[in-house]
Image 1 (cartoon, rainbow, N blue to C red):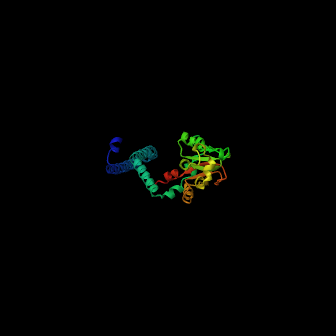
Image 2 (image 1 turned 90 degrees about the vertical axis):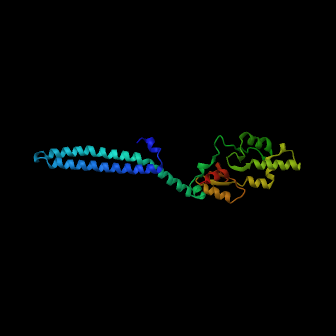
Image 3 (image 1 turned 180 degrees about the vertical axis):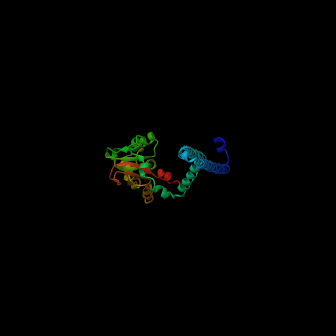
Length: 260
């Protein structure tokens, strides 16, 4: 039987075929060993006394050479027909165990450093606040960065890499719209300081959490669940907001990693 013919058979047929092959090989091996044993006893038992040592050594050498070859052949054939089934069974068992995990149990096994967006990655969009907030224009600075990067979240960090604000584009759009409708100020002149003068937007932009690099994702989930305004948790050097940010986990990443 070729390997393709074997693989193309239905699962139950394959199982039955493997059982027949396994029994046949075992019976064949037992028969060969029995024949060799009987032959060895006859050759040595019927030998004259002066030839017995010579025949005994000859039989021993023959059996020493043949039995390992026979055992290797049997093992190879059995492995060929049964290793694939064992692998599939093990994979299915592992998959079943994973599916039985709850989302919290799955998150508890994932370190934050494996899931976070790295702050040092060249593709990570962030802004360093290196001047007063009343000199940072919402349109020419923040919105321009949102537009060029295609991102909707923007970490604002200081010169030391510490996270100060986590700004979502939606709150900037909402703030500018409110200002335009109220006629308070031209949208081109609105600054970061004016945005955060409104407690609603400052609260949302500072609602991020912080954990250390040894934390698992279940702690990130607990941080987000404990604050309805929290959609981002940063991984920092000492697990507080007062140290350098290494990366961050978004609520979208957390939801993706929670799937079972």
